[in-house]
Length: 237
Image (tube, rainbow, N blue to C red; front, side):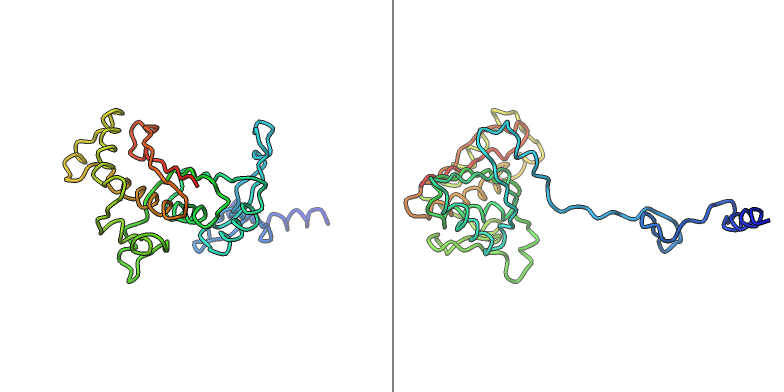
């Protein structure tokens, strides 16, 4: 009789032929419509670093997580990583988006032990910042105007002591011709393709060039066949 009662009780837990789920199961959650779905597991916010310890690297790599947008963490990198290094330090920034390129240049400018900077800028700061009352502005004391910002990039013409913006644009067009990267629609515009990116790279170069005893240059390397971001910054102290 007990077995029959247990069987009947278990059958009562079925609703319309569908088995009732365990409400204490952390794998399941119920949305507003009553539908069952798996609860999302928390995802880690950090990239794995195990591959950095591989023996294939010719020099040892010690990873350090830091938000270089924060001035405090940028100063810590300078003080505890670069200034305490046994020899000269090379700063390498690859495809740094938006303001990350600016902060990397600032790290190089403010750290005298950094002997060289190799920087490959990537995407530009957003135009949406122009709608703000005070668009982002990055301060470099020795730079003309005290620095540059989003408004400088999108709204102002700039000059250069070594090469004019026209020359930078012409170099971009030459790269496009060599790589076959042409777009009829964009070629109808009055300004050449890559104009804003060339201006962005130039501003970053000028910021790096403000540091004492530093020479910063723009190198054009056609590594992107269909792309326009083929400009690299090399600064030497």
